[in-house]
Length: 452
Image (cartoon, rainbow, N blue to C red):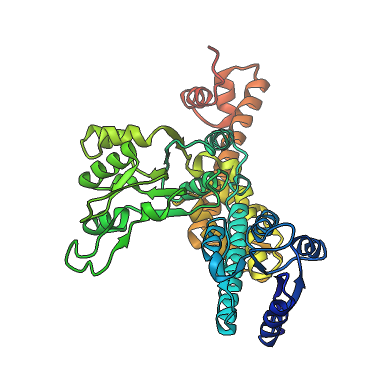
């Protein structure tokens, strides 16, 4: 496979500088173009993009700083290295504050040039990867990927869209497997915080004795084993979103400290003395009834109200059965894209079973069952035989119920026929049917045939 050849633009009004820098970079397999002024460099951009710009600070006409500003406006990911004379290093440092990657002092050291170029290109690639990843995440966790047409889900979409760009805390409630984290991510990636971090903290899985350090960080030497400073997860999410999953599992001591953070928007690392201001949005989720937990004094009432500014209750799958076929086909499409098979859909019997089942594991359970059937199915449609025996038994139960309904309806029709034949004389009808008059009256009552 051919390695990508990176394009570098060298801008300097000294031809000897251009000649030396270009030769060094070409020897290191870079594709180099040059310009004697910022205006010429800007013109070069119209013929294609570059992975790196190396420019002198002082240029005839527009300055190197103005070229830096043009480059960053065109593509903020393109790194710019400033070339400066010894007496203007201070100006180069100022340029770095405006977004320059670094600077090279004249006379240019070839080894330093190669090292800085390699670092700048590596940073460019990393930024592009991050941009691509964030775009993919935004698409993956957009509102459109939360499948559902039921009225309850439509209400949830409406609230999500209204609150996405606010700073308010959100509390998401619902049974395990209903997709609470998916909703939280969708809110984050549709907000103005989408380019910042989304940090998940599972309050149920992190031991309480280390949770404070995980949330707020700690200073070196603050406790046995604290060999270096640790940045907490709240701090890592600066300008982004923290998702506190299973918030109902947080112990009382940490509830108090989290409340203080929500009130003051600042943290204190374990063992630290300096308070750190943070701009972080909190989205919390729980499968517990927090109001009941408050009444039982297991969850702080003041924290509950701080978290419950916006409330979203995700319904269990059994209460939104219209969404089940949509979800099943959505998971099937995802698997087709991932695995390369082309399974077209589900047999009618399978969809009947899916809509009859109560789904105690909710959406997560449905996804797992679709994946299991997908793996086992060699054909174009998933049939009942690729489901677990537990689900297949539901079809048997359904058949028995259907037979029972048929018998009930048939009995009613026979009674009505006998009654019509005898002008609704109950004694004669009972005789035709071979039962007692008392038995007939009981059956007529069960079928709603007795006059009011």
